[in-house]
Length: 450
Image (cartoon, rainbow, N blue to C red; front, side, top):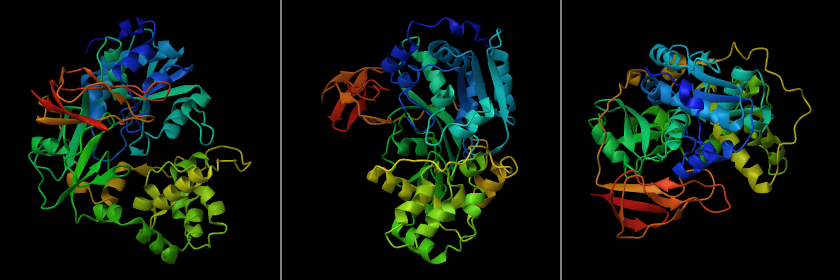
């Protein structure tokens, strides 16, 4: 594995290169990376924790492109003025760790942070605390404590961006009820149906997909949807699987069940990772508010305002299989709509005494979710799925959608700009991953491949 000691020879502005290349947070959030690079920080953290059950794409990416990941990390450090770089990775990922150690710069500015096999070790608040000992202020971002966090795939993209290469391809794991679980690289815009076919098709009669993971992923049965820059992978399950049945239950039914059945045992709070880190998140109190009249409901709902939506309370903690995470999501939406911000409680911010003892092992979580039969390697394949029609949403990032700069009938090349970042707003460019003809332009650009 080639070393990355030359990574510090960066262009005058990596932020400009990231903007030109359309780099965003690849871990799921999609925050435009050039904005992070415009800040100053003392520590840059590479998030390679990959804590969602069954997902492998970040681990296999690090195995195969360790030097490029470190190149992106060191260049990011130079850009924000950081003296320290940290790569958070689970200690069990032996092959990826060996590859990273072989590629570390001689000057020792980058170190590995070996994490336990628990969920959600990749949560930004958890990772920043583990790497720096600092606690992000409630409702704040890592920059508030001098840290910048990038997903490892975003760092790979930054290394490419510094060489003038835009974001065109996405690392993915497709697993679950498929004939051949795989991890591979797919062109952005590829329909999910092509991914499913590439993995030999579904092995269940009525397949649906969890996009991004079992815990925080969204549920869909529309396999026409495209891969975007934030798609981490698909878990294919039968519609009758208990996990799918829970995720598919309508919100009004979730609330009615919670209102009638919650006995305030508080397990949802006692195992909440944000609560254990010291933040005032109390899902059981949000559940209590379901039984109140409208007067006062908003007061109790504030106890869900700092929830990270990891799903532990709903999918693991609750002995009655209720929906505290969804109640917290509703509370956050209500408070945002009302313009009510977190005002604090006056309590000192410090981790709970049981923070380390109450972490949730991935194996235990996988068993609870009924996914043990699908806990397989999903080995890397250097082949790619193919399709004839690719869809590029102009809003596949946080902020304003990109502005289309191509017209129907126009021939485009791989890497060509399809959408320009919205001027004067938080936004990101969108590029074509294939050569072809523009077939439609609306909220997305559709390209039919040559």
